[in-house]
Image (cartoon, rainbow, N blue to C red; front, side, top):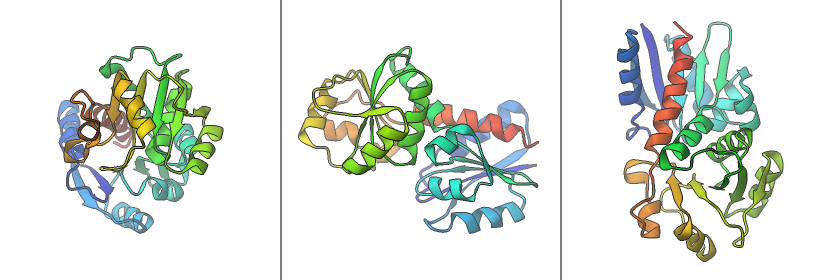
Length: 242
């Protein structure tokens, strides 16, 4: 029996249990998958407790991705570059960290109609762990990445570390991925640019996806495609634990 879970806060809205149960059934693997609320600051102790209770793999969501990175004893290159983990493999010998958020972002961009990421001009809104993973994936795919943040110092740090540039209102963009919290305020220049951008993706989904309403655009894509692809990639890692 493969025991899996998603941890974070909030987690009650998560569609990960539905997706991962579907992957388990499709693969014919006997397993369970739960949503477990873990507050900020409690990731390491929760991971250790779940490991003791026989859990083999975890998806990690807000606000625990940086804490999970610190708890992991070994990380894949994407997680190392992003300094964030959204998948933990609780192996007997060590806790292993991975990051599939970038895989999800590239898949969501393709599904939204971007086509090849190579050479595409993509704006990433935010500087948190999800944003950093997206920037890592865009750089690997040869995109021209731009960063916007309400905190200029964080935007500069991400741009320098992750092969991106600071976005200026004069920079044309083809697509944008927002990793901002629900209800985030947009400055006038950014709002104007997003209204002209062909593809806009809000990494949030369900009631938490507020960017489309804020812009008055009904064609803003929510984060479900990103979640599906990221979840599929994490399930392929979980299969390794059998």
